[in-house]
Length: 165
Image (tube, rainbow, N blue to C red; front, side, top):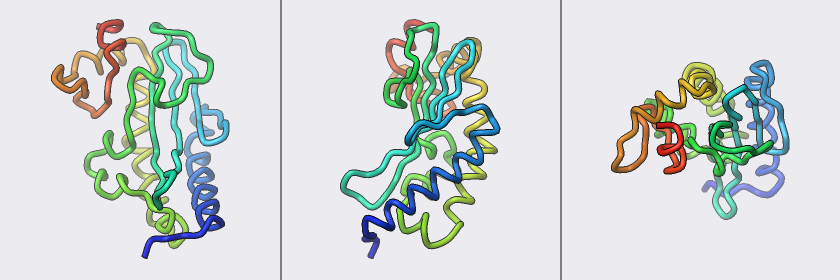
């Protein structure tokens, strides 16, 4: 059974935060609670750990807030113009990363290793591209207008579609 107690849940989140910090801090991201943000001339990049309120899992949410479309010093991932969960941007890892259980974070390093590899090989490069106005326009140009999802897997707000097109 996947049930974990409150101490295990806290330990799982602590381990995930520490692991993400090792990846993100050298890249210029600053931590605040369960969020890491990096500000560039054209964007605020957000990596967020979301704890499940009732379930036994955590999620890694990603966001790009275009500074051309608004002014927000500390946007949350859901307030960003481009958003995704880690698995959406790394389809080859989606099945493994769509369900990051607390147990998988505390029982072994396998899940943390998968997250580390995915962040370094796929997520950070995609965030880097989207950190520029030109990169944001590239994402917008690739969206499927039926569902506002880009070729890379970003969900794009209507405001971004109209403001960056």
